[in-house]
Amino acid sequence: MLKSKPLIQAYSNIPVNLMLFDYRGYGLSSGQPTVAGIHKDAKAAFDFARNQTISSTEKLFIHGHSMGSFLSASTAYEQEISGYVMESPITEVTDWTRNLVPRLLRPFIRFDIDDALANESNLGKISQINTPLLLISGSSDEITPSSMAEKLEKNSASEEKTLVIIEGGNHNNLPTFQQYRNALISFYGLSD
Image (cartoon, rainbow, N blue to C red; front, side, top):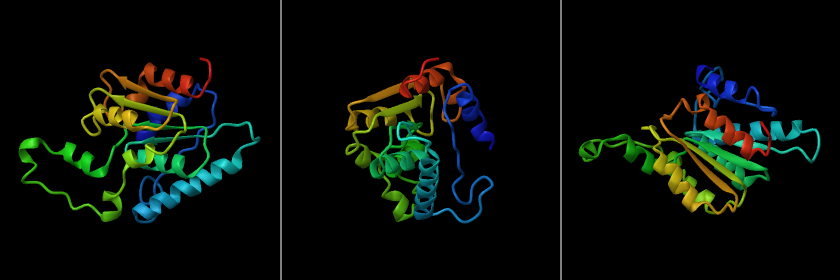
């Protein structure tokens, strides 16, 4: 829950209902994480949230951080939603792991990645999704560099897409910036 605290604080004064969930095997949830299981968890969370809507005029947005950006894009691809947020997003798993290792060491370091995870690609999905998209990244993010968000924005099929790169932001501190909160408010069509 500690990683969620800044996100909850950023949303605290935005007039939305917010639902967070842990992937199986993370936080307080039980079970073993698998790619199929995490996608199943995301679908169950989405179905629960959709069933909580009071009227057909309510908007439903999906927000995924880092690896959660795969779930955000998958949900936007499979479901009818008002928009989706990809925070510190990953383009593709192979692109991401390549960025984790300095160029000099790449010939000596290999990652053993489950095929199901290796096939995850936000680039492939967002090129087919016309739902409004907000991409948020930090200029100092060494885990998922802002170049990934830029590449996703370039490949997005959405006619309503916004890219926000927060100067000095890293992988986990974006919700502490006012620019982050302002981007969400604007994307959700709310006034501050």
